[in-house]
Length: 221
Length: 243
Image 1 (spheres, rainbow over the protein chains, first blue to last red):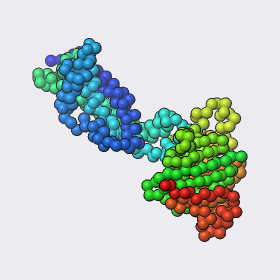
Image 2: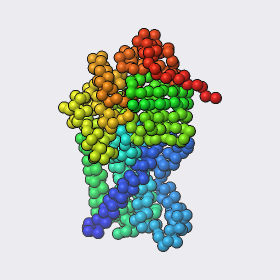
Image 3: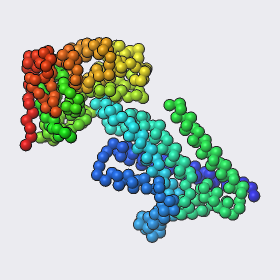
Image 4: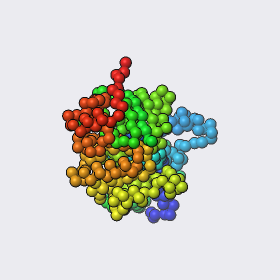
């Protein structure tokens, strides 16, 4: 058996998914983490527990939950079916599954980073006439940036490695929904050592490079 | 003539704050032990905290009125605030810190009113503009914080324990800086301190705060502070308890 050009598909798909998930997770997670780091309200603990839940649940539980929601007979799935949209067994389902599992990792890290920013800086900016948006982008986010960046890397890595939930909602369709972890699993299953070994090498080297790069960057700031 | 007219109440955790102050272009020192509500008064004035009841007028503007449901946001109050630990942005240089408040103003206003150059000059900060706050001495940080608060042309300047982190020489030096500034800017200053010497040197008026109330006439055993209270025509209203 040899490594074919179409065997690159899982690599490209996984990277695309991981990049998109990072963007999604940042767009949703930054405002939420900022809000939760600064506000106290009734029932906050329950909210926190709910947001963090995917971090500790088995991926199969998340996969099942997503199937219940967006499957053919699911609450959201039925509504989407009426609009002729199907998510199950498409790469949108992969995005969804990876976002759900990566989100709590980013959220926790970003919230800790925001909490560590002294509120006096924000207060001072307020007395200097800055709007809340300006304060966020010129004071809070730059000061929390190392932590936020760490959260993004964690989310990227988690999205890249997502297996269980992805398999349940997107299956293993070569050339369509086959990500690196899924491809490795099925390559081993059918005894295709070349593909398995190559993919393992690629994801290991890539992950190593990302972690090394971030650690290096952290030392320079 | 600049004028501040304040009367407000706020329920705090362990006591009720109830304060009334009228102030012209003077330096008012809020004096008292820690935990008596001095900093809270500054936070209420600047809009970082919201009074339960009362009103804040500065010159011809109503900044807060519980009756008329007015509550001007902190950023629109034009009140300079020098925090106790200065709160200089650690990721910005001295110049970036000082220019931060200018950002929202139009370039026209900037040219006429908000040129930081003379401020930098008079504060002896010109050679430090590209340094970060962590590279400054305590006194330099303090001067940067005051310059940053003044560059937006505030109508009132609040200083929270401005000398608490300074050694004696710096402290004496900065007292003079603040006194000079006040002469030049002609706006009311409110300075929080628990240091008797600072109060005696700086104050046109002294108000002693105790558990959220003004204690009239009994400011301290210190002759000068006491004398100042007697001499000046500051209206000291003993806040009346609610209910």
